[in-house]
Image (cartoon, rainbow over all chains, first blue to last red; front, side, top):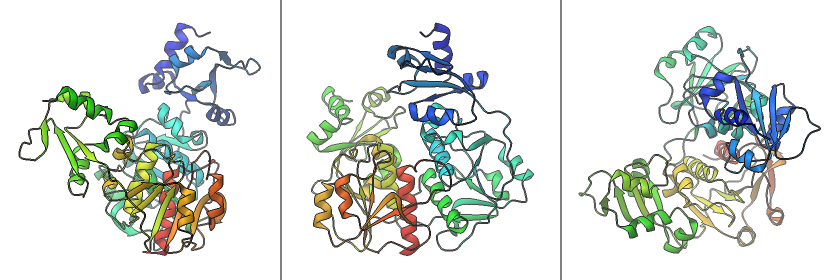
Length: 240
Length: 240
């Protein structure tokens, strides 16, 4: 049974305002919750339409109740309320780190997190005007990778000032062709801007090298998560 | 002014059934319609909330009327009804051609078409259980590339039988590492299956070489449009 208070609370987590206020977020679907339970994220509560009283912290609810709290158009039998990770800090590693500027589409951010996980990239820095990583659509699109990749938000100008020793490679339409010559350094930042607006002006001073995936056709741009995937694979051609 | 009949007709084109019946589809947004007008697609009618009587075939409508026919949550001032291309046939070219099996997500198909356009790939064959290329969400996600890339539907088993002379490279979790050794031939098919179900069994007999983008982390799979982008970029490293 779902109390009115629970219903109101869980539903409110579809909005960033309340996620920030309560410091929690939603995870839906069997596969995602399996991955969640193998992670170090702290589960506040699981709601399920299946009878799972053997598992701690599971509240059994009806399908109608699930429908009333789910963010999915087709709800799954499982929904978890999970504590957000706080006070994450970037840790300098001998690896590639993604830096995202103004990535506003939830599907794109989720797919970028999933792609980073595939390529063994464990940290992503987002500008404050990127979409919230705990947005249900982002969580869904990560396919579970949100539990393995650390995503933090920072003022990017400050962030680059603090980490001046690490080269910044920025995707740009008039950069060096990455398909032809090895270009990355093992310890690198890769800065990805918005498809519509590119990279914010005040960040240009921190770019070590602009890089380009050359075009062979007529599309104006690549989708940012596709471009990120291509650049990560090129990085892995250089450094396995 | 929008007649009731026009409203009903345009709205019906959000559904595949009616798109097939009428042989038309919707294009929304200024940029897409600009790209449409530079293409060889035939425009049946343009509806606009701006006064554009100098342009042929433009019907001026109110914002409320636009809202009532648009498939977008935030309608643009322009909506076009466009004739579908019929009787497209695959033409053998000395280039890569994509073959898509069970790509059901409209965003993924649209992004794949946009990516193909970027990499100068002019033809995509879809299995009949892929999403309809004229679905409004697919059209939107192509960002205009739908007007430049030929997309046709075929029974893939028949298609491969007819084109036996061309090697088929298929993305698969246990294939040859494409990041390490040049593997494609100039004239190739690249077969992409569904993220959940892989490549349909009856197509395996046509595969010349399974190929893999190796994983360096823990994600179970890559998004199919990201994987397609990576494979296209690898192809372009071999053949410019």
